[in-house]
Image (cartoon, rainbow, N blue to C red):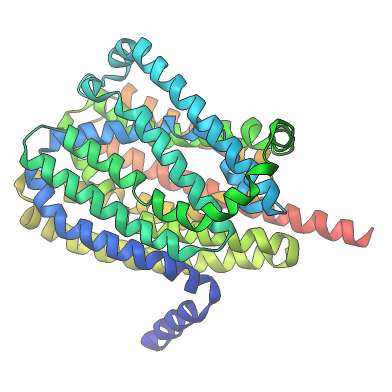
Length: 439
């Protein structure tokens, strides 16, 4: 009976158009992750947990600074009613990314000493220049991904996942063998992030060349104003979200040892990346699906949301149970005794990992329905919960295991808030759409 239900569920997922598109992207993700998984034992024996902690701090800072890179205008590309308007949004976002990256360079040069004192990131200071570089390259990649989503060119996105993994692995191994320290991990991450830009540029260059004449100051100003809710509401909300997600690592770096941060980063990078990349692939297809349904079948939005939540819960639970069971035994054997405590971190973080996988693809629901107000409310609530939990960890002077448990519980609760707000937005949209039709 159980096997029959399992087979039916799997067949339903494979036959659905939505998941065929997810599989197009996930093929690249799976191959890319296989490359990373094969290389991981080598990489983790070339670098220490302390060096991995530097990567964790860098990723946390980049995760925060990358959010305002385009003021969230890139999210408007898939929902533009025509390609001409989408092209203008594309170039507007690119201009903003360049200006903000330059501003970030100046800010880091002036304020890196202050950041070192208050954020305890002195180990990252020699490599601080990598942050604006990583921010600009990742912004351009994200911009092209959003354009590819608009064109439903999921195969091209899949190819970039492979390019990214190969670039990251080769650089991290080569520089690790050279024994130049954590800079090898950082440069490998930058290459991995930006890899695939050329793959995504090629399919759209012909269209961009023919459409560039439509881009002028007036048209840029028009889209700047039309989609102003993204920088006014979505960007602050996303920034709060990024701070809430990344500040815990910076906080742990300030009160616990570098080894602890290295173990947590190991779980996030080696164990979580496959499922988070799958969630990202699902999110990209879900964005395209919901953006079309908003205009064509608005009454189906709630059905789509609930169906995807159910499917993701099935996939996520399967992955987390297997990863936790196998990881506890194999992590010390494959990666060495230095990483033994990472298996403990994995067990503690598993509820947070599962809930994040289920909820994260639906964060774009509020952008698609242009409910940036709810986006802001959602992330204010989430940010407040995270800050309170970190204050409690500090006030009670909790040991690192206790602190990690509090963080895992906090992350699980925040994922619930994510889903609740998406559901409210869909319900309200359906109600007001019905009222408009009846009137």
